[in-house]
Length: 315
Length: 315
Image (cartoon, rainbow over all chains, first blue to last red):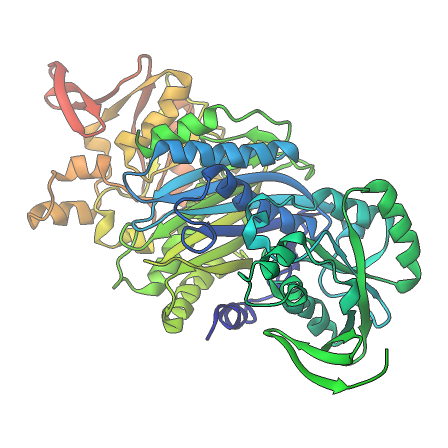
């Protein structure tokens, strides 16, 4: 049983509750606690030494990543972050200087989004450092974007560029808080998720709940410079396109919107965020597979990468 | 630098924020997010294998403890718990059966207080199990009890019985949610905290912020059966009274209230919670020390235990 299967097994039996508008399985929990016209967003996420960062990683960047991951999930609901708690689990005899730099990284990012660190705790973790961040936020009820609204015919968009995050971006990414809020304020998005496992993995979270498929255009995938460099230097195990589709920790937003809105969106985006790329990478179709169209035809994309060609067509 | 000093150093520089009514240093963070007449309570707490439980500890009890610790902090603000998120950090190759029992323990306690588990995540922690619980709750603004309201002349009360928790109670305690709410609904408490480090340690958190002292009556301290048994069997390093005052993880409520309210409180408590002891253990005085009065006189209580006699008096 892997992690995903375990969480699914444990949480599918959880009883529904009148306070919980969206429970396990979305980017954040969404609670109705009586804030007029708004939901409370509630998220927790941990980074672990040896898994999400190395002993030698700059602690300010570790702090940035720890908080940034939670902020990215708030962004994926089009929410506003409100306050964070920090849990530090540290080996005994830890270096206070390391912890102070960690906090400096957390604080700098927190200040950028006006998120107070309202408390937390320090405990002992005998064999390594672990930082768990809890975050609350709010979102107008009419603008909360879940994972479960994709419709056949929707255009699929992604912010930024994809792939090669481990070369540095995973420690320095900017959570798309401002973009998520702007999108939901100006357009009727149908579904949204932040990319932590790559398009090939995370797009499935938008497809499965509503039983639809997707067709992506290989030429439209925004491949990052890091993914290209990685391939050129021979350090990558996969070509740039596959890296862009399957590398983890991009922390970009992936969303769907009625295709008739696509042109207006692209125009407005260019004015609002001229320095950040927005790409229409494909469309929602019937079925359940993710298919990739390139010059050679249409083939199915599986989690591990490409599989067989389906039916060669001229392009 | 120990944990407390580190947290203090890191959080004292945290900027104030208009959403944060009470920040670091109380049982929970208290946020004003626009819920009519209520504050949001926000808490996170972790239990770690080898520190808070053993590899052989019944996982259902580990789950109970993990959630119970957070609930106890909500109780200490007189709050209502609303929803929890569970972060599991587990070694690779973990036993799914252990995790299922852990969840069963969490769920049973959550159900008792109508707290939905609204999500969470599982991550890898290479060398041991760690369970971090995040909890939100709410409290009527007029009834939120902080640590900072004790007044000279207040009576000091404690629920339940103290000491020897490691013999079993630390895994099975009942968080005093119902008592906290009832107390704040029916009486004007001045300050409250839950006991995680013993009266000798935690009472100081009620005294220091308002620069007062306390005088305890040794005969009034409710010593648990476990603390007495422990001493009788010779397994304790300290006599029962000292165990009651300094053992950790009692998770009882310690609070102060105007002394003129004490009799009405005791009478009403007996009717409402006939099976749970409530003890008036002393009073708030001027000064800054915690002093203990017994037959031999008045002596100062320090964190590690008794110190010198101050001035012997007849009793």
